[in-house]
Length: 462
Ligand code: FAD
Ligand code: NAI
Image (cartoon, rainbow, N blue to C red):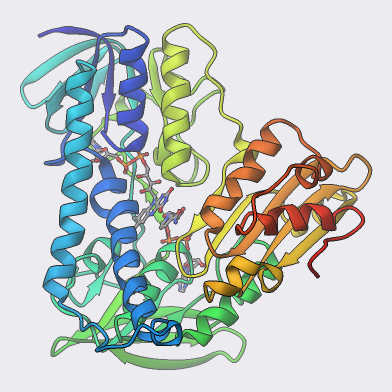
């Protein structure tokens, strides 16, 4: 067997990016992946397929609701579900094949199969034991289970089943008003399903800016989603191809039932470490089953590192990628770094929702004096022209120094706009720095500048 500088376990965005960076740094690199294709959760059953379905269903929505207003008349398109799924699969294939190409280009070996770590420096795949100076675990995550809820991936599904349903359900119950529930709930609502979201808390998307949560929920309700809030799901039952969901309203202490063609369980994900043999190795774990790492992403066992969903922090592809690059640098004797204070989060609904840095709630809890600059997309000419004037940009800046502490955007292209603020934050910019930067007209990004102006003497267009 060949001896490697690095063997990475898992070819998701954490693992494959780490491998490419290792190869760029001149390290002999292999990746073990048990799945048939590279790309991990993200490319196979996560980010990419969900965005394909969001794009297709959004296009349908535009045709149904906005085309006629612009003088584009004709029969509105009907949905060929099989073709929509085929389009989604083609998108997956194009992306996963792309990673195979990058592996070849960078001379990275793909060891096919499921890995375990019998000892530091050794990776077992089937009957073969491979040697490596460094091992990086990037084994990702899987859907968390819910007591009383049995998933069959047909009637009661996780996000994986929801990306390949046999047909579009007439009714869909989504358990959990988090990112997956709202993105995939939006897809099926646009495709005609009656969507009811059952959420344990009194707010959607926990942890997000409170004002964004309220605006987001109002907009989703307008789009036809129904919300049952403060409800703990007790169980699901399947009978004659339909599912019954029993939930308890926490405040009233009353039990209720709701029936649907399909139930999507979207109550979070958990780290995936099965079969790696971490117990035997004595690798320290958190109480939530994540692998504990130090500042250099090394575990308590020298030479074994971990990155991505399997360690602490937000379960996001770009967070995994950044850790992959940084861990590669560490292994190569350089100084890899991730700025955890500037990791954007985006929900790809329409409108999009994006955030970075502190929320008003977290700043209040910290007792930090801050100011708020807010600008509604209603005052943005481009947004008005494109039927996208719902939402706002909100920038939070330090009251004394004007340094940008966070930003929250709900509106058109929020997932792109947020990066202007990310770059500004990386450079330690003040809101005034953004406000003094010329922004092309007419663009959505003018709304970011206006929010920055609102941190000072005030915006121009409101
Ligand atoms: P993963 O992508 O989970 O990859 C881990 C890989 O390791 C898998 O391929 C697995 O087969 C392999 N593996 C595990 N154990 C072994 C073993 N013992 N041997 C060999 N191989 C092994 N994030 C975003 O940032 N943006 C989004 O829009 C987004 N959308 C999402 C939509 C959905 C429906 C879901 C489910 C997730 C989404 N995410 C999104 C989250 C994102 O997919 C994850 O954060 C990301 O994939 C984590 O990357 P990773 O490399 O840590 O792990
Ligand atoms: P989540 O953590 O975003 O949301 C789970 C929701 O379920 C929460 O609102 C929670 O309060 C609720 N919940 C928990 N238990 C419940 C119960 N018993 N009854 C009712 N509600 C309950 O998790 P989700 O949506 O499953 O996503 C998993 C991960 O995938 C997230 O961490 C996210 O980062 C990632 N992801 C990211 C995307 C993006 O970046 N656009 C898209 C999809 C997923």
